[in-house]
Image 1 (cartoon, rainbow, N blue to C red):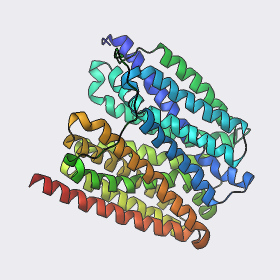
Image 2 (cartoon, rainbow, N blue to C red):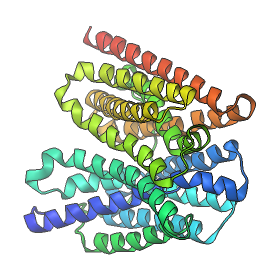
Image 3 (cartoon, rainbow, N blue to C red):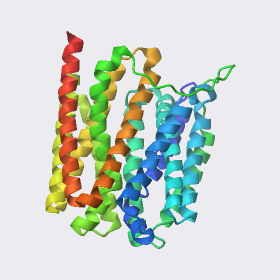
Image 4 (spheres, rainbow, N blue to C red):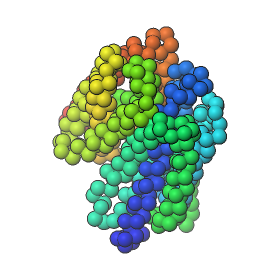
Length: 396
């Protein structure tokens, strides 16, 4: 595709907005979970399982169709991601059961898995030449701002507008239609090969990156575990322990985490590469300990501080870990290694949250949350130490 600047700017904005709208839909249920619990009567275990089905959908889409856009083009996969998001929205609009929520979250995961890789690459490829240096950060911003805006929008509509558990999904469905129209207008950025080969993305960890992959994965375990708790259980923590019933406040706290993540990623350009993981892990440790303290004391101020610090730390360790692994990875193996790393990240978002959900019934929400915070802080310390060791070994 030639870089005709007006068309490139248009295509860039259309793809970025579609990415934003899709990712926004994946976090719309976050401030609504407590309302669903009241109406349907399910406990914390089911809440974490409903949330974790999303991660399963993301992983399945990454593995099954992660490389398809290289063969059939970006636009067909972008439209497929928007379709999966629309199916999820329709399910949430028309069903009112635990089974419906599980199905809706699964299709939401499919949409995120398709869009995460395809839209990120499409945003970078469609950027005008003058914007190329910042295109990757802009793609990440579209992703994270979408994740952050979803709870904010759903919190507002659930508190101030009618039909608190359904209206926001109708609004999202309308936005998805507009996004699909925009993708239909945008130009394709990939030349389809004469012989199309569609295959499963096979994740792998090559020997060249293994030493750095392990600490990056450990850091991702810590960072994405916190992201999972913020988008699944923090609303319950705010309602049950801190007396916050307003959906807008709950959505704003969840939004803060993702905005801080963008800030953490952007701040890495001022930190030496060898220090990035250390700084990120320190922020993550401070953040999760503040979250634990907020659960223990029931203080909103500590929760806000914890969300901000842990969000910034999560953004730093994610970008620093990915950057270190990609720098050491042979070019022909980057797709497989990236797929493996994202699978670890999304498992990290779901499995610890499930464990936390099962521990709430016997130990209580407060104690389970406090112990979880200490464990995640310890994991972040392990990631920081192991990355330092891996870098020293690599240098030697």
